[in-house]
Length: 405
Image (cartoon, rainbow, N blue to C red; front, side, top):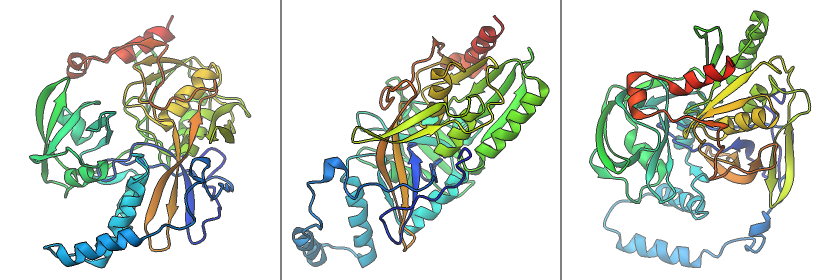
């Protein structure tokens, strides 16, 4: 997440911690986590959120020590002190009941950081929890093993290698799915109420965030697979080339884009929007804490543009879609987006561990928060399983037809 607000370091009251702001994507750390570090100026958050001001300055660990002593004396197995400390930290993050607030051990943090750079070993699918608590596929990455094997957005993962995912956290499911490149993992999926079993060969995955081509009718087609650290710079080059080539129409494909860095989203949106135009606002406790505005050259302003979305378009992808739509620079075709309207920060501790914590909600220029609601397209076009299998992209066809009217 980068506009002209490139790699801004956020200072705060937390000593010995580096703080970076996040537009929450659904983390699939290990399978696909396009995390979301938004550096940006200096941000000093209040020491307590309004809803947590009632909490004590420190916790009473008496009952925790009682539990520890009982485990120490009674557990029939070998434990280490570090295991128990990590368990406590994971538990504190889990106690928020927020699926996007996560503690990473130093080892987990290293894996997460590698995924922020769009390089990881796995199957290439974004996961989260469904509203009813099941492990769900948000989006397979285009061209990656999961998509090639037939994994679809909204698939429920019932088991991994015959191990049930009931009661699993997203991180635990990811760890079960991860593995060395070249090895296989079998997923039992539930799709529209029917079971589907798929075996996938894992591979090392490096995802280019921006690709472009010219369609047969002369329309410029740009796909952004994720908003990572290189997306802003890559898209700037694409925008400059489109301007130089005199592009008359643009399709911006954000389907199955699970999000990423807020600053990258700001930079992309800025290519269509006049300087100072509102892209999004952050709110904390009902109060606006930051307004993100266009800082680009608006080199693509007023070029007829269609944004393609579906249920796998989330977070930073939704920021761009909403910003262009609400500022009357794009028409949206496809299916309702995922609905991820929260802002997070990634806090690095001195031992190498990290906390990814939800700190605010983000709101589109029209004032709406899309969390759990998604963005409704201007024209709904459903890409059926049959069309997808046949390679018949009815959504892209609809976008071309709209632009040629």
